[in-house]
Length: 233
Ligand code: ZN
Image (cartoon, rainbow, N blue to C red):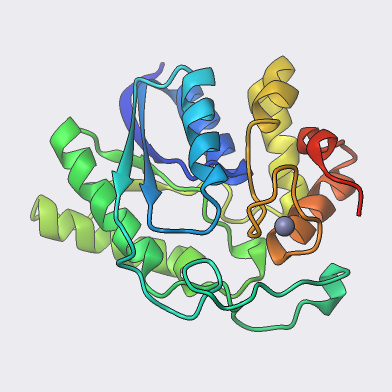
């Protein structure tokens, strides 16, 4: 039986889209929020709008944060974006694209919107296997946030359930999950997603996000529907 309502943090990327589709299978109403935090890739926001419409989500709010998240990440500053030829070149440790406190802020605002909408279930597409070393993508962090939001908003530690269905999946496994959940709409919906840090439609094929996405599709044995938009190198 479907439960009633869920809230999904929808970035416009592959992972949050898979989460939203999964939430649609499990809940009658799926509301989504997308954050505009001055990120370079505005195309992400356009993707999120198109995806929310295609998945027929109950509501979709773009929350304007402005340039409040500061840092040296090329996603929110003029620092040049690193480019690689293969995933082997990506160094260990935290990627320079890490934006401090981003998911803390996003989940805090999700807690606010969820409380207002009478929602206890929140979906976020974080994944430990991303190996970008983002501390705020680990289950330990999600558990701590879930505890803090429940305590701070309802006075009951775990009154929110933060769903992280992709947490333990490799990128190839995430592709398989998207295929399973979206069925014959897989190509149509995934073609709307955007992952590239450089903001290039179809992906630049050189940034950390593109390399990881490309490798996931290759390992899963599927053609990424966004490749049809990719410019020849
Ligand atoms: Zn890219």
